[in-house]
Length: 281
Image 1 (tube, rainbow, N blue to C red):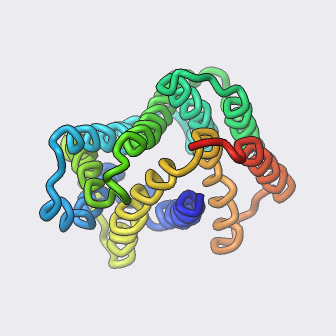
Image 2 (image 1 turned 45 degrees about the vertical axis):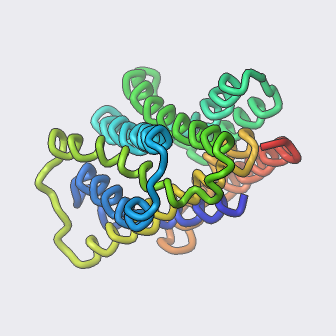
Image 3 (image 1 turned 120 degrees about the vertical axis):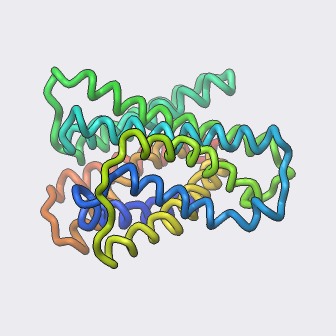
């Protein structure tokens, strides 16, 4: 659980940096490519020194291609169809996908976890505030594609680690996760990217922070945390970034938000986590 909480705080801060220094100023696909390429460099020493079974490498690469590569393709295409507030609203359904996917793979339906996931969706909707119009179903489907890819990667890695107890921490193999994402990111940038690169040292510094820390360490810690908690807790924690991000905006960037809705949303998320307590991983 500590890994998930740490990465939630890390990503909340990183999203604020993206919004202030990169959004609308640096091409999104170049930013994604840089983040994934730098993350590969973080794990390159283990990739070169610690060979793994071909099947394990392929599976980790496939998970990375889906969870990061395809997820980002869907996510950035959604900006062509929806406004930012609408995209933020539509991202709240990931917990439901996680708990249902895990139940399908596990062959066992857990109604408590599904209820906790739905409660987490309600909590996120309360804090998001802005609701979309009913004629944005194409955009909705594109964002759900991103949500589903992110959920598949998390559930897949959780099941992978459960079957590979001998891998211990998993960091020696995790580089293949980013290699798979890079296979998607490179052609995406070549086909969809624009000639809009960082122009200031601050923008480059933010990109390096995002690549080496938020992506390089962040996705490894998140997936490691996912392998140590129940599927219900993992599902709920996917929406914990919302209050964390709002708190960062309030405390650091002095942005306005509805405190009463924030408190209510946090209370509902905590209730969701309580419903998932003391269940097996």
